Length: 306
Image (cartoon, rainbow, N blue to C red; front, side, top):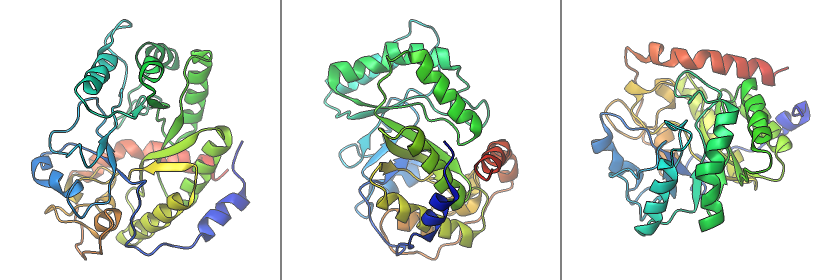
């Protein structure tokens, strides 16, 4: 059911955290870029409080120290055939080589066909899950993350259709959540997800205030991080911003790095460090990059406010 106005007001009234905090819940949503070789050491360095990461694939990132950040494989989208076992076999190989795999993530925004969505129908997703993901739990005790749908109304519908198509054969342990909008919308959306799936924990695997001002982006970060840390059913969260501001597709002020690769205040706070005072600046191509998100964010915001 829809979250109530009372829930949203209570979330907004939660006290803000001091900007410099640490949390074992924080992870890295790794986005590869032309700067990765230079910037990767930032995320697993001695001053980072991050404990886990995912990279939208099922092969660990060579520039990230797996002994510091636990790797979470993801089956991003539909395989090339209905007999393909590539994901399953790769995860099995990682385990055999000594890599500790405690969790895997399902499909990335299968209800979305723009801006990184895997554009996958629920029936195909269910069949693929049963074939490649479910056996990992039965054979190795790996905990499974449900498909990470968009924050728009289509996301809830798609996820309901997915579990229906599974016919009881998809035993997800937690629900990943994506959100790109203000804190009020985030609080409402998270509340609805929790109300719909009360017996599952939640991971916030992508979130940011897209195209916000610097002040609004920083306020959003502090509100959301403080709130996630206070919620027992949110066990993991990963801010979407591990890239430089001039290549950000959610606006320069959401990025954790400046255009020069320096930590912004948000980036430093997320790693458990003091503010840097470094101001992010954007690039000329950002408006075009962000255009794909606009429809999704607008639809989601209109929905949660009704």
